Length: 127
Image (cartoon, rainbow, N blue to C red; front, top):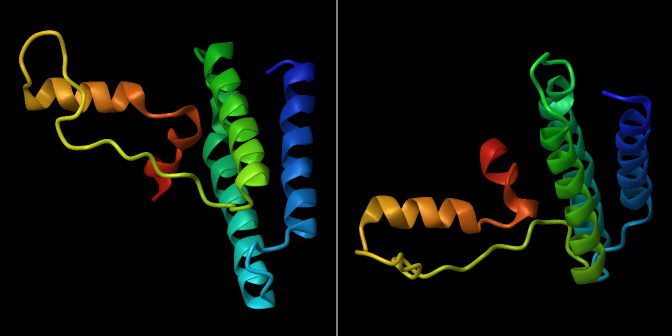
């Protein structure tokens, strides 16, 4: 990991903790605010711990690190915009993605995986 990338990752980590400190729940209730602050902190710790070895692996390319940074940035921006700390779910009807030929289950699963937004990539891995 380069020094610039390391500084960017640490900056994102600090930004998340500052965000959690200042977070107010959309409902305005104190108990919801506390739950959401805890969720933000726990999610950040879990994902950063899970991804800390991405930079240590000898064959890791910068694309994987960049993908993790992009996911983190997207989740921060979406959380601020919608005033919810949880990832926004995507709604795809079953068999709703039709490939050019046939409607097989395997091709549907592959299309669903490819259509998953960047901010949900790691959410399913830790849930």
